[in-house]
Length: 297
Ligand SMILES: Nc1ncnc2c1ncn2[C@@H]1O[C@H](COP(=O)(O)OP(=O)(O)OP(=O)(O)O)[C@@H](O)[C@H]1O
Ligand SMILES: [Mg+2]
Image (tube, rainbow, N blue to C red):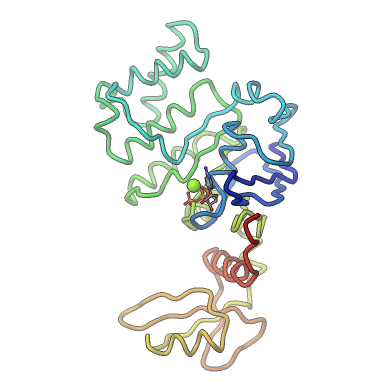
């Protein structure tokens, strides 16, 4: 169990990237969903002990993460959003090197670790190729391979599916799903399906705050009866926006399908739709936007 209590992070320029975040994250896949700039990477870097929060506490099992970062690192696997530079070193050599850094001392054990991970992430055939020449999907699979060195109990992956084609995205998500239920896996994303498909629990982070937390199915059930749809002409959209709480719009065959939020039948030709997680997410963001953003200190 990973436990965050009142975690706040204010950057030197005054940006309040995290604002009193409290979360209990159990074992299994946990989805952290939020738009650009929500604070996802800040949260993940903070839990990964790469930065110290301005306030708050973090516990992982019996570890006080802020006081004992080195203990957490022994149990952590982290896939950052951006590696920066990709080395001209082969995948095999790089994993071997990283296994040394992770403390896998014996050469025999390292060989076994590296070969298992290369097979698991389907990189065996390209193990001798330089990582610099990898495609986006291969890079992300390499990223998860390095995160899995040393059997971590806490795995943090920051927007791993952004930019992947559907096939690579599936391959990546299946890989995560196979890791097992005995570890805490936090997956940040702005893609609703990533969470809907494989996270038993999730939170929505926006403007540095947790806006919503729970099991996707329960959150969807709670929104039932509140989401209404209608197909309109594109030029009518502004009019509808002024009269209804529009949560999402989608073009379909030259027309626009609007989804609105309303506690009871809004009339006007709308029909009730059984909302999905996307409706839950967009209505949460719509609500967030109505609240004025906190001024930078
Ligand atoms: N080093 C920094 N110095 C100052 N402000 C920062 C720094 N890093 C991030 N921020 C700001 O903090 C806020 C949260 O950024 P963060 O990168 O955590 O969001 P995110 O949810 O990961 O976004 P994205 O989906 O684009 O990756 C943003 O307003 C961002 O501009
Ligand atoms: Mg980010």
